[in-house]
Image (spheres, rainbow, N blue to C red):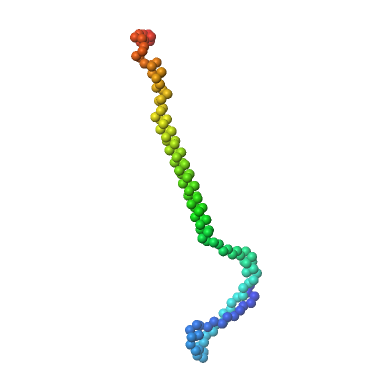
Length: 124
């Protein structure tokens, strides 16, 4: 609620430049409500004024962003190295898959060159 009002007199500014003639001066009275202190006091209790150092805050934010990007880059690099190592191991396994199957002892044992001439008769 408005407890009291103050009045302000308001005239047109072009009239201030010239000398006013009788009856041509227009004045209007404007009623301005007085502020309500309980509301203002409640607002002032919760008011926070900050004077931040914006340049420092910007630098800290950029530093955090760079740190995050470096961590992501390092993680990507580690993942790529792991994948490359797995591919290298699979390639080695593929190239050396039959190494244990063909050794010299087994090849000599299964060779037909050093057998008897009647080794085919054993089947019958």
